[in-house]
Structure formats: structure tokens, C-alpha cells
Length: 276
Image (cartoon, rainbow, N blue to C red):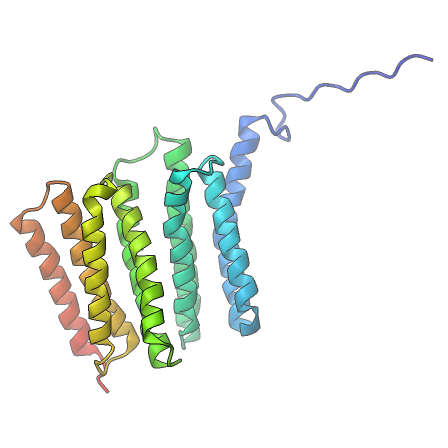
């Protein structure tokens, strides 16, 4: 009998061939697009049944890790570890923040906003690694700054809410929060190309100031959203001015603008808050 014909070699241009660059591009895009979809579905499931809290948050955080791994070109190195800090803690703090939301409309809007923010951040990572010619200078630094501030608001809202509503141990809550803050600050300065030898004193000082501010604000008769917003404003001023100082860009006009914006926002929030 005639010998069997050898199998046809795979067509390198076929879309289903894993060696095809277009195939890998589409696959990475699908992995990226699934992040906001899974986030929305998971949080809506948690809203309908709180018993799904731990399974959902574990699945979402594991998928975020996997997505960051893919976006960072599959490298398990220091760069990957630094890039995962912000999306992982932003997702986790946003999840905790939503647990204390009362309004259903607010919950759904925040779920959508957090999902889009995660997608925007990971898409920026994707562009940075795979399309450097399309990357806009300082876009990742700016996005990291603002998402980091939102993370601080979510995080400290959860801290104040857990101490007020759940009577959680304040020392333990603050230690967990400050550990996360320290890691986020480390990643913030690293993204801005500031070496650790120069940035670590600022990380320590900012963490201590936020720690003391949280303790003081916990005694004020205002809601935890207001207290967290004041802490976030303090972080906004300190991050902006410390970054400018380390980059030799600090001047009186810049400091005045940060203080003016933070002061106006603080006055508006404190005067419109419900004191009880």
C-alpha cells in the first residue's frame, strides 16, 4: 500500500495559526476587552447575591493578573510586578468601595466607570508595550496620577466605612491601607522615572501624613465619603508637588495652583456636607 501523505504544513498567513501576528493581536485584544465585561458581570452578580463576593473578587483579580501578564509581553520580571500594582489595587479598592454604596443607580454607574477606567489603564499599557510609535509621551504618567487619586478615594472610603459601620479595628485597617498606599506611591514615582533612592523619603512622609490625617478625620462628625475626599485632596497636593520637586519643576505658581484647587474643593465639600 502507498504510504500515507504527510499532513499539510500550517499556513503561516492563516488567521487561526498561532504564529500569525494578526492572530496574536486579535487574541490579546479579546483578552483586554473581556476585562470590563467580566468586571461588570461580576459586580452585578455580587449586587444580586452577596455570597458571591469572594469567588467573584478572586476570579476578577486573577484575570486582571493574567491580562497584565499578557499585556506585559508575558514577562515575569520587575517591570511586570511594578505594572500590576495599580490595576490590582484599583480593582480591589473599587470593589470594597461599592460594597458600602446604598443607591442602586450610583452602584451601576460606578461599576461602569471603574470598568472603563481599568480598560483605559490596561489599554495604555498595551499601547506602551506593543505600539510604542503610537504612545503619547507622558500619557501613562498622567493616567497613573489620576487613577491613583481615585484609588486613594476608594481605599479611604472603605477604611472610614469599615471603622464607622462595621466597627473594624482601626489600627489594622490603617496598616492595610498604608501598605497599599506605599506600593501605589512606589509605582507612581517609578512610572514618572524617579529612582527609589530619591523617592523613598517622600513615600514615607506621605504615608505618615495620610495616616495621621485619617485618624484625625475619623473623629469628625461627617460621612466617610467626605473624610475620604479630604484625604484624597491631601494626597493630590503632596503627589503633585513632590513629583514636581523631584523632577526639578517645582515653582511658586505650581504650588499655589495645587493648594488653590485643593482648598476650593475642600471648602465646597465641607460646607455642603451633612454634619451629625
